[in-house]
Length: 173
Ligand SMILES: Cc1cc2nc3c(=O)[nH]c(=O)nc-3n(C[C@H](O)[C@H](O)[C@H](O)COP(=O)(O)O)c2cc1C
Image (cartoon, rainbow, N blue to C red; front, side):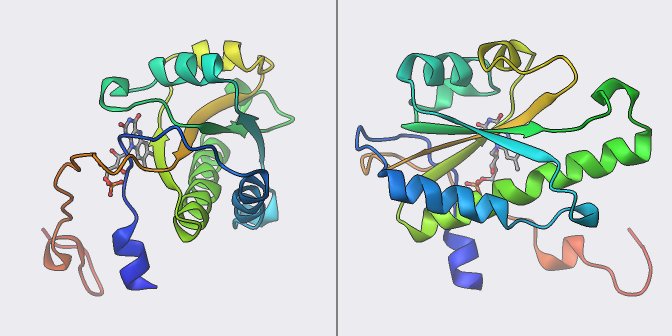
């Protein structure tokens, strides 16, 4: 598992190869089984296959110039009956924490299937407009999927050392 985790990476260059429908369902199943606070499952997933819409969505995300267009986007909708702007801050924090869970599950399921992924953060509310999201909901994150174009030059992937990020029993610098 650890080796598998270390091999997951952001894919920056996608080939034209289409993702099979049954693989999309597996990726969505992985999202469905993600943990959430009180098992609230406060999300909906929008599967975007339309190339023009994918291009528009990617162009509304941060660092979009580093990516070619993925074959598929799954947008994570932060779903709530209470309008997002009226949520109390603790509840709001939990909602955002919840959003990361299906994202990671989807990336790993895709990796299992040999499919690359990239996590993208929409910059404004254009993505919500494109996807016709009601005013009281948000799309804090979208995930792009596709087969990696093997010609890609991968930026060097690094992580902080454990000794820099782990403390025992209490906090210290
Ligand atoms: C919450 C979140 C938001 C991210 N948003 C973007 C983004 O908008 N654009 C982008 O190019 N990468 C984005 N990334 C990808 C990270 O930059 C990437 O995961 C990180 O640099 C580590 O590289 P790796 O995924 O190859 O291990 C995001 C990742 C996370 C977890």
